[in-house]
Image 1 (cartoon, rainbow, N blue to C red):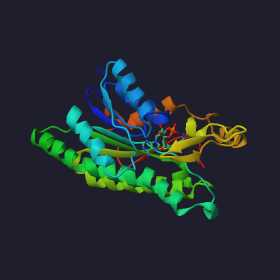
Image 2 (image 1 turned 45 degrees about the vertical axis):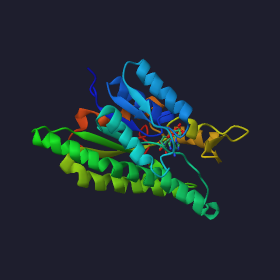
Image 3 (image 1 turned 90 degrees about the vertical axis):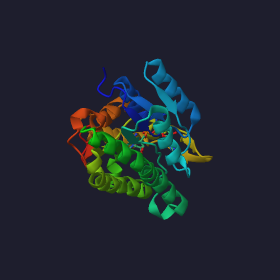
Length: 275
Ligand SMILES: NC(=O)c1ccc[n+]([C@@H]2O[C@H](COP(=O)([O-])OP(=O)(O)OC[C@H]3O[C@@H](n4cnc5c(N)ncnc54)[C@H](O)[C@@H]3O)[C@@H](O)[C@H]2O)c1
């Protein structure tokens, strides 16, 4: 029996990178997972991988910023698995510029994906959680549910070129602490994990030609200058960027029963990096 046996976990942006590693980690502990990605192919592939591991999964793909997505996502979990135990708000990307070059569209896009989407998902989850918690309380049971919002050290300390991203990631900490206070009565642990440098598509070294990702038809540049990556690695006490699996392990801490009396906290997963 895994530590999350039969729990129902929702993980946004779980077709790749850290989200994928989180979905697989939770499934390896017995959770049934509602996978999501903007790109259907990786989303479907992760759901298939989880089923092949012997757990259960469905993919509810599409952008977390789409109107109606939150109800569709939460509704699918309740309908298919009759539960809602863990929500990880992970989906996101970066769209960087110095402030003088940053457009309104760019600033708003970061707020939409990193802040408004988690808010809508949690709002959609509020009523089902209230109903489950009421039934459990009436039966004399104390069942803990888990929310983990994914932030960044850019949200805690700021980062040049990321006025929009860091503002959204900082606000997510406010949302986390508020929901910790609103949902304590339903026994929901609401926490945040802020990553330092994790090696994924977002943080790949920029080579001669900068890579772009397609976000809803827009080509967005991703990647980090190799010199900056080297400088960061030197600043990280553990000497390197983290792997998606190491990042997922930090999220798992807040999903496990061992964190039942921890709420409203921000855990930095950055190899010791303190800015
Ligand atoms: N990699 C890092 O160093 C780092 C550091 C701090 C925070 N983070 C945060 O971790 C999270 C995961 O990032 P990653 O590094 O794994 O990136 P990634 O690009 O490897 O994976 C992110 C996944 O989210 C999906 N996605 C993007 N926008 C989406 C949307 N609107 N709706 C649904 N899915 C969407 C992408 O398609 C992709 O599959 C992000 O919130 C990111 O801001 C990452």
